[in-house]
Length: 435
Image (cartoon, rainbow, N blue to C red; front, side, top):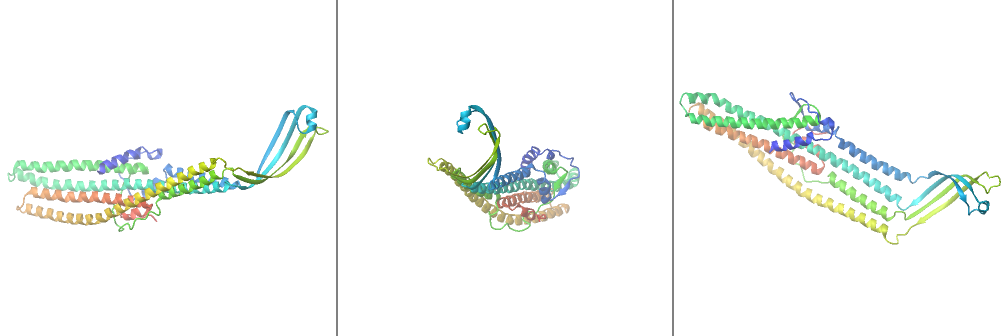
């Protein structure tokens, strides 16, 4: 199980888009690193964080641009044309000819039915982008944590396999002497050979899994590293499920609110506008006696009201409101699913404590039985096959403990991921927590 998971995640790590993460260093003397260090080093180079930051900045710029619309706007217009005039009458009488003007215009729309809603929309989409950035951070660090604990489990399993193989090797010489002396039947020697061959095969597989785990972490950090030991459950239980800080639910909530603001924008689009307008500039016309320029000054008041007679704006607003309701329903569905998952994880973690205690007791009893069978065999009372059986039972219990620790660690990571509180995970794994 550990090998399959680590293999799959190794492929993902080597297919990562960041070029700087694709160079795998030679891993001869790996540096032990804690999970918090992996987080701080790997998150600093992943482009996903830059993408999240750029999205927030984009909506911040949009919000700032909308707010600037409250200020007066200046523009300049120029016109030079040739043709037959109808107005004023003097130009009409002169026939076909040129006319030109240059005007500096100023406008101030102090009432706009949609502008306030567009500002609110930009604010909410900016908040949604921030929540999306937090959701990415939790997802990314959660995946790194899973990679880490699987690599740590591979390290622990490798150590257990070495102890298993070495324990069997200690029996090889005395058993061979007994077989050569004819004390035991030759066919019984094949039992030890079979056990040793199996132990060597399992050790080779464990070594391969350990190398893969180290390769994944080394590729992520760009240097030769290995995980340190984990002790899941070191900081007690996880407490009652709390989804208040779940970033994905917060993102959906902000997205629904932004949808409501978009509906308000559609409903008030070009509906009411009131403002002041003014302009000044030179005008050249043949109607002037000396065919020269004259200054023109304009100051006025503008008002616009556009009723939604056929419900066009209302229909678009209703569509946006329906989308917002859909997002809220999606958020509520995810909340219910996460609540069920967290209750299941809490029950699993509670049961795992009892399983861990029983495994510890089993390891102690198996070690006692192994020592007893070894003493009996050395005294000539028991048979060496009993020693092998006791040895195998001991290491089966130790390996099961490694698998249980991995399951508990993965459950703790998923629990912290769902709650949006991954910073507590290193402490729950027996390592230093983030400040």
